[in-house]
Length: 355
Image 1 (cartoon, rainbow, N blue to C red):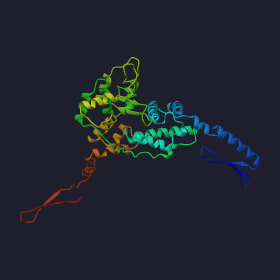
Image 2 (cartoon, rainbow, N blue to C red):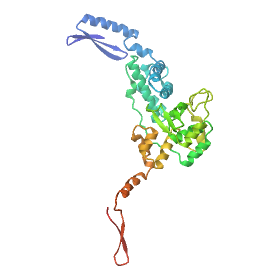
Image 3 (spheres, rainbow, N blue to C red):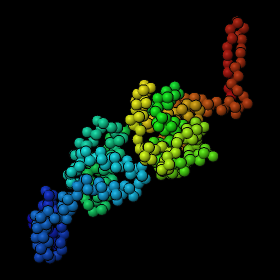
Image 4 (cartoon, helix red, strand yellow):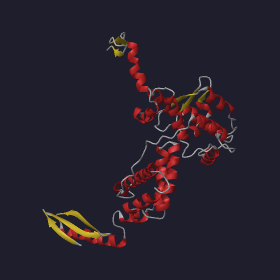
């Protein structure tokens, strides 16, 4: 530890937690000596500036604070529930550790371990939550650094499209147990997301005009979903729980948050493999495109903000380009009419007139 003069000002120089610290004090050497003495005591007692916060704030304590003061307040209920699950997953590696102990290397270890069980996209969403948590710790003066910034995200493959053929759709519905079948039916015939289906309430269904009003969507915007006769009859047949406003709920009135077990059982029963619940949404979109519905309409039905998201289904309509150029045939008076010309030897050539 030392004191030195530079450009008319005294600076103090000392080591704290293995890191060199420098502070500008002013023109008084006596003041610099007093401050340096104070810093020595603070370092010795572990009370210097952020050291106390680093040594006393644990991942578990701050995760609870983050949930109560940020996630539950600023996010939609479905997102807050998802964040709670993410924090639980993160705790498998970081529980019991101080924030200062969560280093980029430890996060890389979590990333390499987690990728063995889930997709790159899932790992990236979890790291994004951890990054947001550290940002809040900095903003709330609980910590001074964000180690996640030094960790590279995994490369994602968002081009996967798995959808069911018509025969597979029938087989899956036949394999579903009673409480699951209406949920799967609504997913297949509306393209609604799982969270939108589980959050659906009776008050948001207009049976007179065949419209479902979604207020809690992924992008936060209100969306209207049109019901066909299959969806309408399916929902009419769902019994209403006397103590719950939710359409799909358990015997105790609590809404479903997952049907993974029964869904996987149904898939296994009818021999469908490599298929997720979200792929029911892909099936809805894919079947529309393959039956000639234009991509702009599909975008609106899915609630995509940009057409880029919907373009992943474009390859399922190989005839849409041909239909587009064929429109020229109906807009011209002179068609490509073949003209047969004889060369006098019994052979015929077919020539085409130009437009």
